[in-house]
Each structure stands twice: as structure tokens, then as C-alpha cells.
Length: 314
Ligand code: AKB
Image (cartoon, rainbow, N blue to C red; front, side):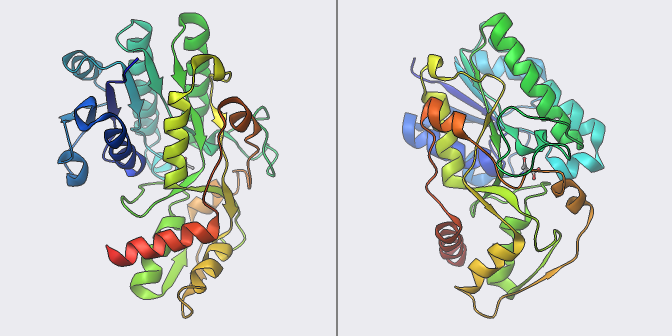
């Protein structure tokens, strides 16, 4: 199947870089980017773009039919921190958009779909170190609840209706092109911007809060790889654990200090600390490595260099 792709939520942190990579891979006219506004001009000007509200079933269906789409990447979501401020909005957006695409796949309008889950599916009762694929999952955030419920629905649609849905549980994603918005792991992006601008950063998590993280290039590689894998290789149809690096704010501050010796960090925790405290410190992603050959490339040092080099140029 030659993919004809629709990316929903293409202007966000992951969507924008996914759009770029898929356009390089398949050609720009094969990849339709969509979002609810024209805000991200890099995405809007780099190929076909449509305004599509992920909560509007008819709009999503029309766009799929208009462009003969066979593959959808559903990247629109309200993340953990914003979700706690607007619980019902997060529930409605995250669930409506998923059901729309699952139902369009069930009805045969598309052949394959990608839906991101998150480490937010885990909660305070989950084992924190090397968190297994199959374990206790009692998420305490609205975002985490939508992701856990979404995973169950993805598996259900695969088992009942043969929907070819593929998913990974993203850790915190670090990138220099597009800012993240409304996540608990966002400090790990902000810290690089502030280090270059002001040589200091006030972190909203405590210095020893370890969380699973990943450089954007690895996250995009994982997303592209799982979607390109043969269907029989994808044995988990809820969502795959995915890991690269785990670090604390203190670790990333020390990595930055190697490049910016006068960099300082202070700590003032807020409600996001309560979210981070329920999440794993590190993830066991053996299934992804075995089933579709997942392998990450960037460690903390390599990522820090990439972040500082690229941000200082932009
Ligand atoms: C968030 O912090 O909410 C996200 C995530 C881990 O899914 N980055």
C-alpha cells in the first residue's frame, strides 16, 4: 500500500516534525497536514494543508474522502497539565477524536491509523523502575485516563473489527523546532531555551524527579517504524512501551553546564510535581525492541548537544 496520509494535529510539537519527515519520505502531496488553525506557518507552507477540527466527524471524513486518504496519524490531544485545568475538554477532545478515526477505519474509509498513548497511562500504584508492558495501571490524571481508555478501545477495534491501529506510549519528548504545550515533561524543553537566553531556569519539578524522556528524532523514528512494520509484527494493539533515556532535572542541568558553565537551576514545584510523582522513572520496552526492532539513538549528552547547537542557531 502506498500511504496517502492525513495528519490530524499537524501543527503541534510531534505533528509538525512528523509532517516534515513523512513529506520527505513520501513526497509532499502524499501527506495532508491538518489542524484547527494556520498558526504554524512552517507546516502550513510546506505542502497541502486543511483546517480540520478533530472533534468534527464530518470534517474528518470529508477530508479523508477528498484526498483519498488511507493512513491517519491522530496527533491532536490535550496533554496532562492542561487536562487538569480543563478536565471535560480534555476528555471530549481526546476521546471524540479517537472514536471518529477508529470508526472511519472500521467503516473502511482508511486502512491504517496511528494513535499516540503516553507514560501517563501509569499511576501511583505502578512499579516505577523499568515499568513493564503489562502491569498495574491506575492513572490519576484526566489525560492518563483518556490514554488508558483509548488503549482499551484500540485493542477492542482491532480484535472485533480488524482495524489496523498502531500505538506507542510516548515518554516526554524533547525537541528544538516546535514548543510542546501543556505537558508535565515540558520543563525538559524549556530548560534549554532558558539556558541559552538567561543562563538560568526555575524548574517546576524537584531536582530528583526522574522521568522517561526521548529526543524528537527517536520519537519520529519510532512512529515511522511502527507504521511501516508488517501487520503480523505488531502483536500489541493497545500500545507499546517505548523507552530511550531517563533523567532528573538535576541530570539535565549538569549536562547543560558542560556547555554553559555559568548555567544555574532553581526549583519551585507546582501542581505538575504531583502528576510527575505518579509516573514511572524508567520503562521496559522489550516488546517494541523484539516485535518491530525499535532502537533509540540519542542519550542525554547527544541530545543536549543537538538542542543547544540548533537552538543557538535559530
Ligand atoms: C505530558 O507531559 O503530558 C506528555 C506526555 C508524557 O504524554 N509529554
